[in-house]
Image: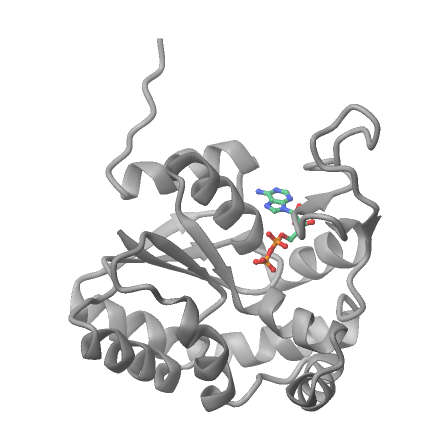
Length: 217
Ligand code: ADP
């Protein structure tokens, strides 16, 4: 199955993508991680990307497509985290998949708390493991004990998790979200999931939408 997970920054795309891909054994493709990896490695493209990342501006559509193309295995089961962010990206993605005779099966749009809460959540609590790239929250989804846990950390704050950058990202998201939603509604692949609830509850709702309902005793 091929899935895209959309939503504003901080709504829980990374968190849910890592949980759902873990349970279903899907590959998670995170554009945020791909961009950060290029910046970290200080590649030519990374140097260009750093400017966008620091400002919170969207990366050009072509660059994003070039970054993800190699990961879109036609025979694979994968979950895209953070793309498409524009209708142009949605169209390019569809065209790319069509070339290989495939298509997105489901597009899940996470709807969360209001912008102020999202900013507060990220700036005050988001931490990422340097070892595994997993995302945590100091209060709501705390990192495991570095000695006993499976993820040894260290757990660091992302450089782009500043209030200014987040406001810009939110602004860009709100500008495009309506159109993206319509685009996938028309295709019949859109499902909206409430992400303003506990992490596990949201995961269950996503699994349900994907046809894997959780059985409760
Ligand atoms: P995104 O990838 O959409 O930017 P993240 O998955 O990084 O969002 O989540 C943003 C922050 O909020 C992280 O610190 C994460 O641990 C935390 N978080 C995610 N989902 C929830 C939730 N349902 N309730 C509370 N905090 C959450």
